[in-house]
Image 1 (cartoon, one colour):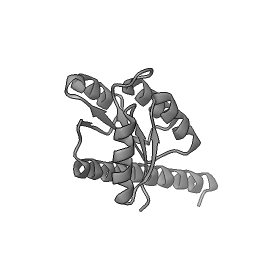
Image 2: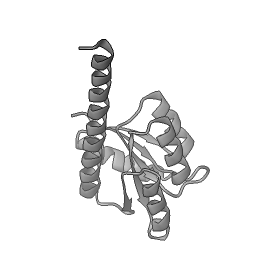
Image 3: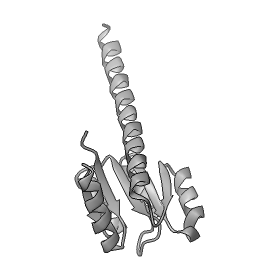
Length: 142
């Protein structure tokens, strides 16, 4: 299992450190220091799971989440938030985020959420494939 993770956070030291921790656990990790950079990376090569900071200069996490879901609805997004922005994280859940975590985050807890988010994405992809196959079979009258 090669889970592709995109970390989007304006705190470069945080993304570098977390990226190294996730890579050490076998994840394929790319990092972005802004919402726009994250969106560009997503368009280039879609990840399985995005770890997205809520508070960033420029586009905030909620705006970026909206765009991610518009570009690729089955990419799972885990929001990272500080204590003062829990309401924003909840808004993110309403917009389709998989879950949220408070900063500073426990790496083990994040890894568990990434794996569950990846499993959900995989299940959605399987359902889509089965529906496409059923559609082809029905059209051909098999």
